[in-house]
Length: 110
Ligand code: SF4
Image (cartoon, rainbow, N blue to C red):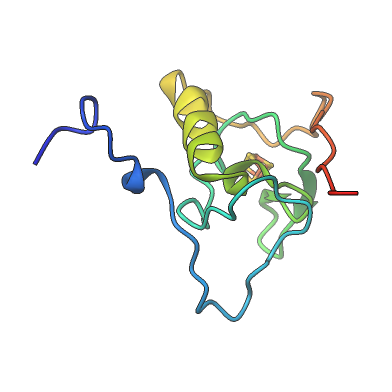
């Protein structure tokens, strides 16, 4: 088995769970729906996603990631995005999202 840094097989970067009853759990995903990061690794860290903030019944501020497709946008795209943001993770302190979320519109064939 080759280490992931040298293999040309990119299957480890994602998959689509077509048996999942929630698929598609987000709309507007670009490319193949990547389920690998179903529980986003960035939930506790700073991220560029369009999250909203709510306070749970224990008084903890949490992200509502309903509008975010970034961890699902394609096999390579989602993998690269997550790796980039985990290179230097910064703990999220509960603040509202201030970054402007820019996702290119999904192309439709005409
Ligand atoms: S907003 Fe998107 S990138 Fe950020 S934690 Fe939520 S799902 Fe992950």
